[in-house]
Length: 179
Image 1 (cartoon, helix red, strand yellow):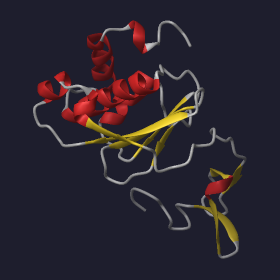
Image 2: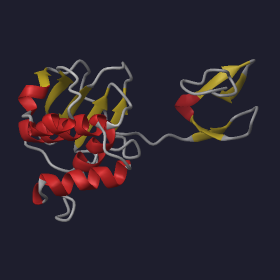
Image 3: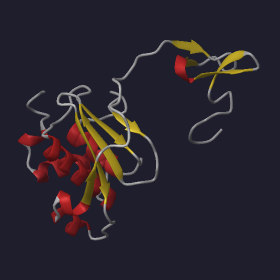
Image 4: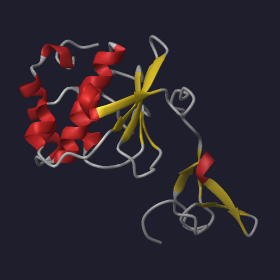
């Protein structure tokens, strides 16, 4: 773990500024993620994840996820930020080093951001066991060309359409977004 990234060497004000700089604006959602990341780090005694030591499964793709990326180093690119979108302000955290995990779910939305920032984690979140098994480490897959558009696609995302290997988009199976 590099000394310059470890969140424990920064004040909460410095961390908050890093989150604001990354996210681009100040909002209640960013605060939820900020408080969740700090509370999870405290409860699991963990720090910034250089690789995949810390994993977060987020049940939303809202602003708070940006704070989790900055404070705990969980990112989609490293494979240690996983989205299982359920529309809940809920986050499952796993520490691969210790094997410990927990689930944080926001008790109640608080409109006063300053009040929320001053609250303790235990007053903001219910802590429960996780719903999902411990995530595997990120995998690297071979890619193949889609028979319709010709774009390289990771093997697990290839589908068969009319007997040909196609990407999800060409097969009409986009998981999110438009056609």
